[in-house]
Image 1 (cartoon, helix red, strand yellow):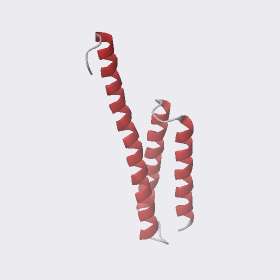
Image 2 (tube, rainbow, N blue to C red):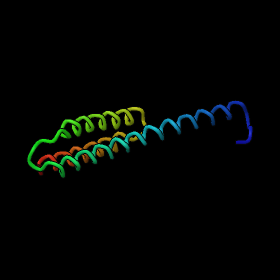
Image 3 (cartoon, rainbow, N blue to C red):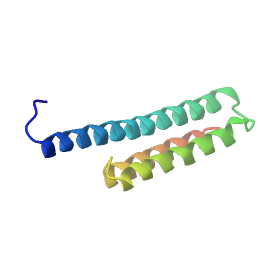
Image 4 (cartoon, rainbow, N blue to C red):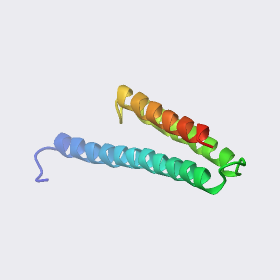
Length: 101
């Protein structure tokens, strides 16, 4: 950025910091969703009849995922309805795989 004014420089610096912070939060949400899906699918494939030790792990991963989604929505990184939609879809995914056992 070519220097325009000191206040413009500061705004640019602030926007870059915010962009990187928001990018990290969105990435954390996506990573937690992927981990949750992997755990649920692994649990479903490994032990069809018995409760696998992954049952607790997938429940913990779900709670962690919801916490990250809610935090991102509260901070305005993702929209409120997008967060609700994502949580709803993941809950339905979890319930359908839980019932399939």
